[in-house]
Length: 173
Ligand SMILES: Cc1cc2nc3c(=O)[nH]c(=O)nc-3n(C[C@H](O)[C@H](O)[C@H](O)COP(=O)(O)O)c2cc1C
Image 1 (spheres, rainbow, N blue to C red):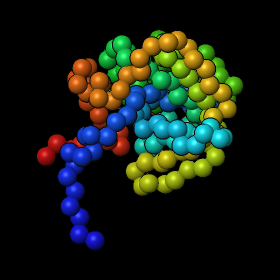
Image 2: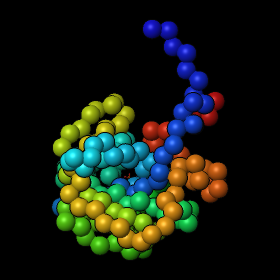
Image 3: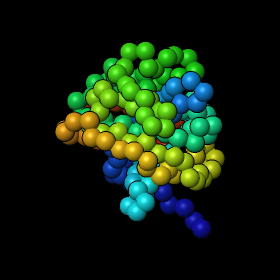
């Protein structure tokens, strides 16, 4: 089929912003994602899209569990930076953030967080550069009331960028 793609269309898509974490054999890690959606209600299931190069991908593949923290609008760039632009292969992202251990063993980030959920992976789809992990939600809790940050707010107000490993990355022409 002939392709006629205007990539500006992708900028009109709406997302939230989350930190996904996982843990395997005592190794903890987490990363920023915008690609989390609820995919079914009964049973409650979510899907996330993770780049295969990411350390978080390695941990989810091995442990088959992940958590997600829904970030608040006032989350500063200084907090997002290590989770969105550094790899847990190079730094310990948990040395300076507040978290607790969840029922899956994943670290649940409680700082700048409105709510957290944990899921067990029940299916995955290989997309080449990325994997879609689908998980059964096994636990979820509200940490505090507030306004969740959106991907649009991150770009327009915080003037944040999306790195190459993000599915929504746009290479400069
Ligand atoms: C705003 C934003 C959105 C992102 N969305 C995703 C995403 O949906 N999926 C993904 O794999 N990476 C995404 N990333 C990139 C990862 O957070 C980044 O590559 C991170 O450094 C990976 O860390 P790790 O190697 O410790 O797992 C995003 C980054 C930012 C800043």
